[in-house]
Image (cartoon, rainbow, N blue to C red; front, side, top):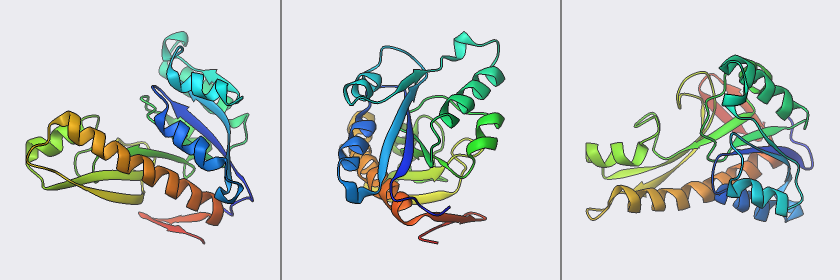
Length: 206
């Protein structure tokens, strides 16, 4: 796509909203090139929604349990997100897998973070699996979302050393810090410069 002067971001959250807050802080600078236009969640009563509401942003909640099946939820989520005309959708700790309807609308525009260096250690236990395997370096991956589990094209990666003293908790926290900085950096780059996807390769500024 060709980036707009201020790319429109829809952020999807499931928890505390720390990544959302970091993005909002970055968007306060006009030179960042993006603005958050809406925040969605898969559950009510979370801090991420409180952050969005405090910032005066439109919010919505799409709970899977409120729909007859996962496909109906997926279509509703796609329609709701689409109503905000986003250039980029960001999974900021969003814990639900989207389906065919969502990907048909937003394939190549929906990005997510993962707390390991993909393709190593996909799934929900990246730091735990890295420790169990005994790797010396792990990290965080920013990638586009496709129909697989953490299998989309990689936008960026950052390395985080694994210390001999690490527990799952300490490693997770250090990865989160690197992950957040990478997310803010590359969302801005995507917004300002645009991107193309060719096979497995993501190229910024084209």
